[in-house]
Amino acid sequence: MTDPQTGAPADAAPRLDPLIEEAAKKAAIAWLTPGGAVWCLWIDGALFVVSGPDEQAAPGLSGAATATVTLRGDHGGRIVDWTADVSAVTPGTEEWDAVAPQLAAKRLNLSAAEDTVARWASTCVVHKLAPTGALVALTDGSGAAEAPATPAARRTKSPFRLHRVKRPR
Image (cartoon, rainbow, N blue to C red; front, side):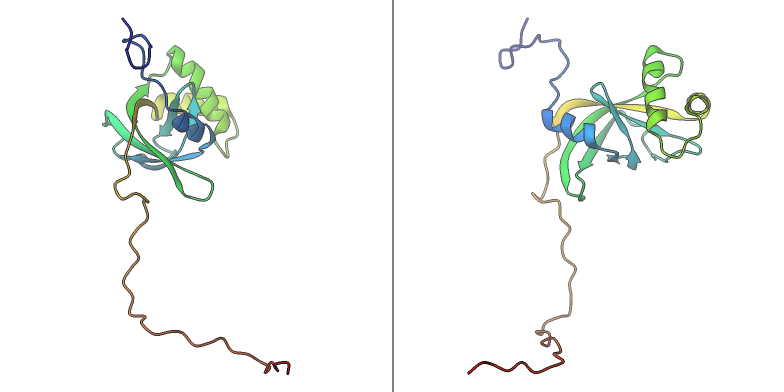
């Protein structure tokens, strides 16, 4: 049976939005709700995050079934917000063996990737954030914070000039 709108099989995984994929491939940091700002790596259609002792904290991520992921550009502007299904990657599985060494290779300030993967297997959690296909709509259009109130109401003085400039006649 096929989906009449997309022509894809009805039981197929949701189609990945190209904006999510492109932004995630370039992202080194993602903002998660719950979880906060974390370093991450995009591998085979999902975002992977490591948290635990001697690694980054991602509060609330371990108990969450879903998370909202925000990806930003080089200059801090929000590119896309999307919903992800959260699951833990189990050490010793085929997925772990494929993902953990890639994460360790991208981890900054490491001396030995093999030791890191073994440490992660015993003390940390590798989370997989798989896109559900749903983009999160912006609530206020821009995502910008409101400007704080200020008592400034007068025009500022003109800048100081050291020399008087003569006007041509």
